[in-house]
Amino acid sequence: GDELRKVATCISSGSLIACEAFDDVGLFDESLFLYYVDNDFCLRCADRGWSVYICRTALLLHQEGFRQKRSFLGRSFIYRNYGPAARYYMSRNAIGMLKRHWRHGRHSWAVAHRLAGDLVTTLLFGRQRWRLMRSMLTGFAHGLIGRYGKAPEREN
Image (cartoon, rainbow, N blue to C red; front, side, top):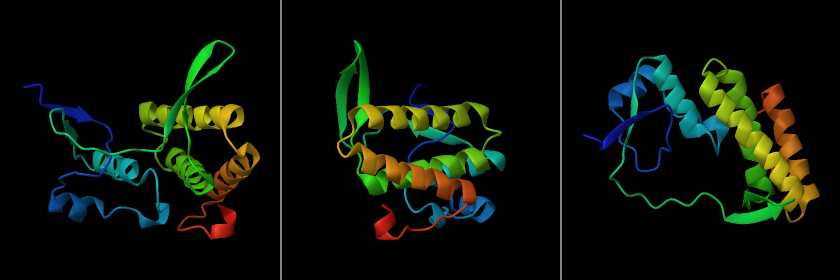
């Protein structure tokens, strides 16, 4: 019935993954360290002919950041209140996702849209916005040059 729905990507928390998929596609890319690890895996699965489904009736409590509703010039925005380390990894790995998976047009558009939205909302609403922006810009640069893995603490 309506319980299962095919999707392009999903979070890997609470996922059931066939062992054969890992044999065919490989493991999660640990060089991403945080953020977009599951998106990358799902898109690599799609490239090898595997499908990803979500169960619409399953319940998983998973909180991604602390969301706040904010307003600017009469428009409402959702601001994801992440710290510098999270902003670094999200920015770096978003650039990496765009480089790796550009042929997945719809998904690439969603990644680019979130990245642009995070940039704008961080500038508008972020506490310590310049520190957050520095982390994001460092992440952009590292994504462009292909520097992955866990970042030294001083760069976050």
